[in-house]
Image (cartoon, rainbow, N blue to C red; front, side, top):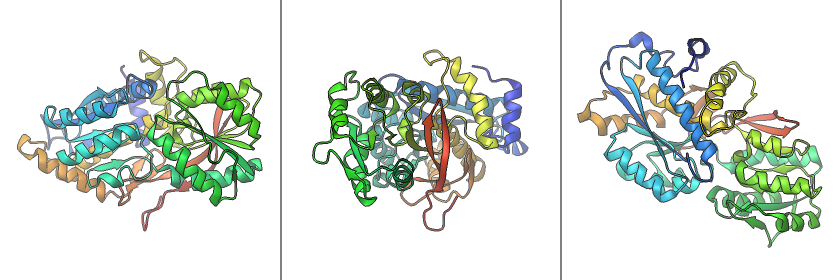
Length: 408
């Protein structure tokens, strides 16, 4: 999975190579290792995301070490598969903390896994940043060691729903959700019904929300019921791999309506499922995004993903690949700036220094602009309302998950 010298040079020039500013101070940590753990679902229902995350992380590892490391220290990543199983994620946090003695963790991916793994990270006093969890309150319930390089779905929908209502003249919507996924349950049963009412959109199936289970391949009955309600739009609270089944069935039944969902909808697979159906979602990064840093990242990681075993040769990088890239960059920023020694005797203190760095982070230069963390541990960063149609995502609005005096 070697990255070309040209790609390394381009990324460094764009300022998105995590070590682009570190080389001038090389030497202070020479001979030591920056041990960072990662928990990704490389098998199970979210395997494509997990495998892409792992490939992205290996690219970062190569970038960092190919550029001489950070102040002479080489990056060593410990990447484990939790198969999106919460108990397995919790066990992996313990392994990373006690056996691998990592400084910090990137992951887990799902809110369900984070709800179990984050408390373990708190017990171990080990910083953990999720690349994807967006169920409201998941990091806030596990302070002070849990963080998320994401924005919770309620914040994002405050921009996306008005856009849907105005653009597509939506007066009535129906909800379908994945009953086996924590984020989808939260979005489908609580966030969206409340916010539809807040924005004056009637809920066509109030009291009888449609649902299915992760892995179901036949949702024809649910879609037929939704079609009979004749809504102006459909809320699909599910990740893209499950939402594809719903959207394909809608198209098969001639039920072509705007579909709105959370950040897990962002995928090229969704675009292929129903190119004529507008899909409204939100993102902090998407393939095709404008901006020099985002373009450089996309150009570098896309060929890496497409030659990775187990991934489609047409795959595009996801928002969660971008988040993983940023998470490792933020940890390396802490190594440079927070007095990290990487000495075995200082491991507990180094973990505390990283946590302090995250809590006081100001304007880390992410792929879409500055990144901070709010008191709940969630990222303050730029986000986009996008529409997927005719094979591409198009930005329609942008906003900032501002918290107090923290802005984008």
